[in-house]
Length: 264
Image 1: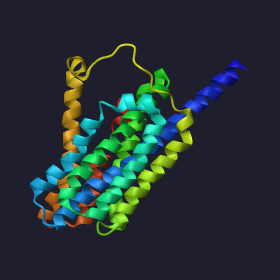
Image 2: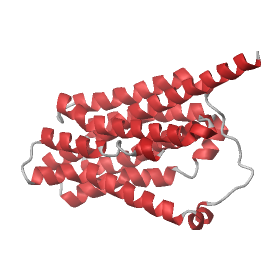
Image 3: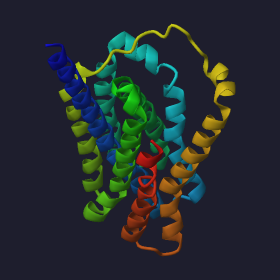
């Protein structure tokens, strides 16, 4: 009986982990699609590269501002409910981006995209770390990062199929956000709750403890954001077709996939 309970519990854990990874991978497809898509659109509108870069920076700024309240929101409303709400809001904000098509309105909207998408990434990592067996945690996180990278790589590839004009690419992104919510809803009851930490460490207090790790994250994130947002601008400047630039972006992002599992 004890053995059966243990096997059942492990099955539930792996089912929940699979559901979380599937959720965030679909989310990554929408994110990987939106960065080059919006850059291509702004470039066609004659917006300067500096403005395109500033517009793209609004999403990471939204990540920064939304990070501190995530634990409190997850404890107050439940982590699953918080993530489901964010998935729905992400679809709504992306629809507003597609509807407005205005560089100045895109500044607050792209900031909001960062605010409402960030909790899903944060909560998904917490769930996977909590659910993964300690002996296999590194390998599971490697698989998690690999599949997210694959999702980001698939985003620009979607533009090869639907193009970068009109509503079709936005509908793909909106559909991905909604499908993400559906995947999450299927496993939400199996996800662990986020409890109050016994020992609290402030953000400023954490920096000296892991400054090298945080520095590497800053460099990697800055490189990734710059490539996704500005490589399309570079390609357009040199008369490289959008389809070819989308494929190149996917190939570059796919490089993230190679070493994730071995490192994990």
